[in-house]
Image 1 (cartoon, rainbow, N blue to C red):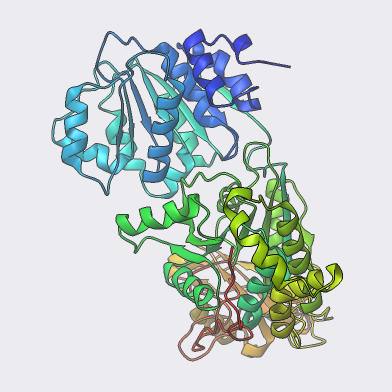
Image 2: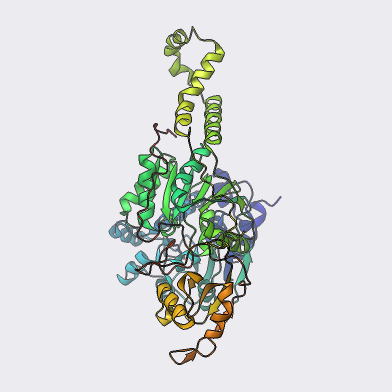
Length: 590
């Protein structure tokens, strides 16, 4: 078994990580640390969140420092305040026995005056978010002439959050002779371009498969009607009594609404999104880290950089627009070798998206059934039994009350006492779930395995490509009218429309296929020929599953405008309801 000693780390660092309970290196640490300890080669490391990347770059960086020079020698850029503080805290713990190592965290939402004061006193490593560091650079309050190592942590997330220009500006203030280490969970083209621009012949290391999911994470999906999503969410949470999880939503408004509804229904929940002040964010995260919250409802941006141990479940209330974001979401659980579950609550139309994610992450999803009321009650009952069995008894504190307790229960047999105790909370679940409906979407001939069956009954659809898209000033309503006007085909014969940038896909009933293809043989748009072709996956099959019809205001029913994936959200003009069966007659205590 590989040990930290065998990697070449110095004794003071080994002593520090031993105090933290580190036993053996993770795969990214085992392979990266020996390379980074040479200190003379650029490095690109691809590994999922929770695999130990901070120690992989932090330990070699600490060992390379010249503590006699009290000027910035290492610069670490990361996407969020939470990750900035986490990295800073980890480095301070790692360097406990190294001597006086000055590490300063620079981030927004906190006093810049205090941060400037700390920098002025002297610093060896600066850990920063791009925006705040640029403010400090603009004030002329930091000098990077002595920087030997620049680390870009969670590079893909920084680029997703729009920090590319900031990163370019910051790195332009550092010496060309520096060594650059880039760590990322995925490798999109934007990250590849940064590596090409700022690195020379970097050593590339991939732990696992690019974009792959953590092998310790199980992936499940539940198919329900859009109106039942919130009820299904509650039932999934109730079925997992010991859940400590994150629920991901697409929008800030939705995260706040779901959190408020969960709180109203007796769950220990709260929201984390971009409209919160930094003080509010800190309060929510403190409660979550201390497990005072059972579930955190968050948007992708707000949750970036969250590093909380022992998250058991990630629930995708809406699938993300980008498959890579799914990888980031699921990576919040199953950390440090522990197991976790990533769940997607979807409507039938989104099962095709599940297949796409499977291909990217290289893992299969398990289609699960939303548990019925009896199953939930049974799970809660035995959850209570296990909790009672494992509770720690404070003999000294309870001793003065035992005589009165024994007296109160003296007329009951052991069996009666157990039944009454178990029923105390179990009865509440029985009452709540007594007439609980089946929330699972029934198998329907209208929907194939990919969720794109015929919405209207027996008609079959073919998926076609057209070389027009949003750059041609089309929205989906415009595209529907354009197709109808040029083909003479009625709108109810057109299925789902997926609008892209320079092209689109649409579905047409098979009996209208020849009419559509013949109609576009000599059609031009703004001086160029309009081309209609069969899409690569568009052999004759079931139709679009519901996402492409339009009402008078041109909003697609079943999803937001200008999005390829539908979220199963409210139809245009409908008001989202979160009641899902009403408020439970009890207050959960977790």
